[in-house]
Image (cartoon, rainbow, N blue to C red; front, side, top):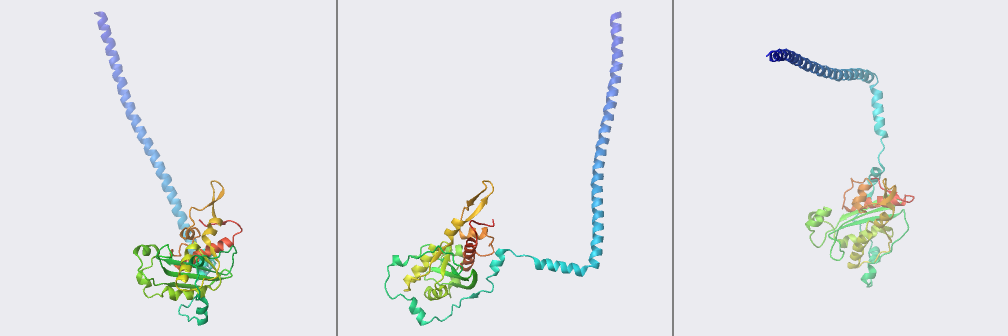
Length: 327
């Protein structure tokens, strides 16, 4: 019995100590939570202090700058205007923009021009020629500074089954444009919606245009004996020669240059990974137009295509070896 009584006294003693320890634990937890909260509040307040202090300094700086600018502007307004005007006047335009502007004052060929009877007689064929021989034309490896760039918009790809609906050409003298030739051509058949979706030429646009029979002698008058240049020259030359043969004209003696072939050989871009010159994925005229930053020129518009073609030719012949694109 005495042993049990001693154990009970011992139990009561430890129960009291346990309760005291629990109370101390609870109080400690409460204080710890308060301390954590106060720590977070302190950290947050410090962050906001830094933020507001930074904004205050920035505003002070802006106020000081505004006062300084105001003082300078009020005392030197005339000088400021002069500086701004000089900056505007000194602004340099890109070579591409200057090239496009070079056509602004170029004269247009007079489509109403009366051709001499002697000229008509001289270009008219007076004997039969084998068609296959007529369709062959001479190329040249020379790179003349006097030339004619030309482009046809057509109703299709095959010259025997399709027609020319727009003719564009530019005559260059010493690499400078001196005269343009541009006209729609009224076809014998209606232009399909598919073709209109490609080149934008509608039946209404060609309704009052001259026929190809009227255009051809004037085009021959325009080109004279100059070297002819076109992009994918084979296509345009086939349409030209086919129509000349069809309507009884002589085969012209003009030599031809294909800028598509020139571009494939000379125009490249630099691959920074391999550190080598590489060919472009495409050498289509529209792709090269973008590559040489001539985007403001229309695509599939005869005269605009001539401008792009001429630019490509001039870039290539004026390059030492490889001609690099802008993009």
